[in-house]
Image (cartoon, rainbow over the protein chains, first blue to last red):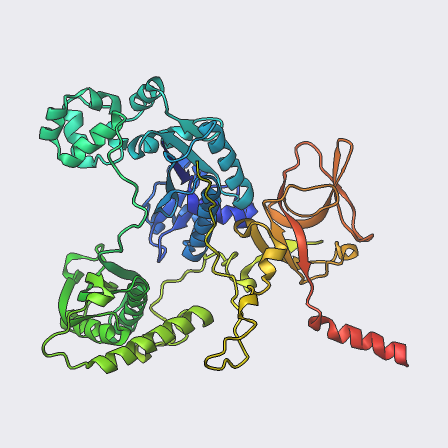
Length: 422
Length: 156
């Protein structure tokens, strides 16, 4: 059996755990850069707010105080996720962290007297220990566990176990085809045209037909819905294939220097991620564009790819190349809204192939790696960007305001909650 | 059937003591076999680090329990409150510090300072226990000034 633990409105729940006055009031958490809503409380959903609603459309409701909002506080969410994962591990040790708010546990190697009770107990513990409500779905495989998890939100206990054919039938009949994990919108449309509305309708199709209509992945989903276990757990998720950072400016930028400064900061951030997964990148892609709401003659968008001579994760080299790329695409006279970078063709650090014309000799490279590790170490201890490249600047004028960022309640002593003894 | 013992991988916070004595080549330190992990205060203040949070005190209503303004609270959310426990509660959308006191079927949130009134929990009140405070941390050096004043008076 597979257990799927999924936090309900995770970011909103975490904000509320440390700011009780946000409870029972509609609220949302904005994307990085405060562009649009990415997490909503149930009350906000009832007001008709949707994920992805842009900030400016919400402005009236926010100003009237009908809805609270916060910038996304990833440090806090990550720490809470880590805590929840640890609590889960005490109950179910074989776990795969699927996303920041979802965790699959394979319990086939264990024997439990009553798995559903164990789920109920775990749910209560997570709620008490960290204040985050979760839903728990239990089923024979991952695809069915996803369905059971969705149905758990309507149960009184917050736990739904689909362990008998009758319960599976009930679950599949209650699941619309486009809500099935692994069936994308393109196939969902195709299937609906064929008269397949629910997951139950889907498994009534002959297998050959599914294979013809979809792909081998479609067949896998089909078999899992029928109760077979086709997807193995991925305990070690593969490292990312590309790292991208981009953010909107607070207003607009017309000049090259502030854009270079912003870009350098994004590159430094991305390079840090690259080093933390012990990878290097062989290609970078830099892009910039004006607002898509600008009148057509004021619209501009361009990108430039640069293939690096030697794959690297050295911040200085990457900044230099990124700035060079930006200068190639920059055209004076436009009001730029965004600049971004993508690091591509990532590979493990130890598989770097030096170029025949490599001017960086091995000894110097090793020294550079040492220096970078020292910089990362210092920045980890003393705060982000304590040690920085001059081009990154100090003022961060270009930086989007994150005024509504909650404190780092769990990771910084100066940010912990204040308790009134009055 | 063979019995196997499972060990949990140690947490990253365990501190390994550094040898300060010089080790001569050829002779191993006789103390090497006696090496133990350093004392970790985290183990002492909480059983479950994932349920442990820290909080700062504002106000003096718990002064009788030795909790002063600005003190650091260790809040363990895994604990179930017992009679007399110091607790952090959610009350009117704020965090408050009180002692939990149950008498028969009545529950009171008690201050430990005569200047404050007890709060009795009644139906319709929105109150939740957020966590129990098993330990508090009092910064002695921040209070040096007050001590010096008292000593001055004593020695006068």
